Image (tube, rainbow, N blue to C red):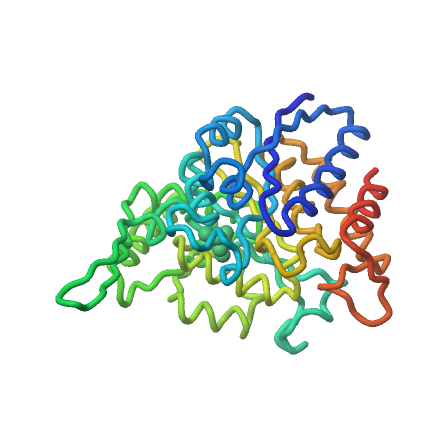
Length: 361
Ligand code: IPM
Ligand code: MG
């Protein structure tokens, strides 16, 4: 089959890790007889440098015309990069939020999975790890606090900043449906996370999630307050299957969940709209401190490419092959520096990409 893929290398380690993911996709094409036509799209700091803004209409149009988008990471060092001297709406992160909105990518799936081979990197005690854990965070991505009206004003010489948190029932329903659908293919449990003891938006969230749950009688629904969830993730992570939550809570909890797995360098993500289209990116950021050093872990981006094969292109066998190749390389003891432990073989970004590519069969 022939597909059009938009590639967004972005900033920091982005170009290095996207290069390795492309290497893997090229190998998949060779082995399975597909053709991927790539088109590069500018986003974030790279777009600011080339076009003066973090996202252009041309970039949106190119992304929209493709079957899927694979992205590295965007952003730089907030203390030293000139991008952060610009007003907030012109900074790299604004480009990422804008492309999510423009492509209607309301469903962000962030798996957090503990690899047997990386148990040593998990910061939790063995008795807490137990049998390990395998959860997926389903984060609402185009609503809530990150997209509400905001302003900073001065009243009687006192500076005041206002952000607004809004959800309507349609936005809640469509993300809840995604979470229940995903849970149906997993261990059939949804934990909906909110702050219903304080926020109206959370009280509506809870009601709508319960209405959706009525259509999925075989799936267990539980509600959990976000502060408790933050605790439970380090106290008993094995209890979670699908965590369904709103934009800001999902942003925070997914970073926590990824840290608990031992390496944020391993975690993929998918951002989907109502159709099969999606944008795939690692859960980690652009790590400007190690950019260009050839040491970044490309696995999260490679696993994001596998998610792209599975969700947007319906190439399940190919996705399985990529995931198996990653597992095999870990089993053989190869590690990038972020997941390195005693007795293992340390490799750089390119070498890790080569090793995985060689094992795709
Ligand atoms: C993420 C990031 C973004 C977000 C930032 C860069 C805007 O933290 O993808 O989690 O908050 O969504
Ligand atoms: Mg985040």
